[in-house]
Length: 127
Image (cartoon, rainbow, N blue to C red):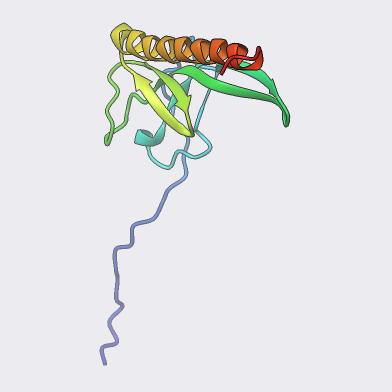
């Protein structure tokens, strides 16, 4: 048994403030959860469509501008439009992505409108 002191290197989290540039459109970010610089995400104001349901008013198709400028796993050199869909986030990187998404939603709305007309026909005595 040696009487010499032993040492070991242990990785630990250090807590310190980090000063970063803040975009003018940013209204908040995930700094409470950020453990690394790569975890920092800037978020703009959220907008949502709202509808009254049997359980109360609910938001859907919530969207906001988002930017994770230091991300390593999913690099975002420029801000994106984030859209919450079914509990997941769809990131639109440019106007073509936004246009493709809105065209898909418009096509679905057209189908819903046709179903509404079919409902009206059925309720009016049609078969």
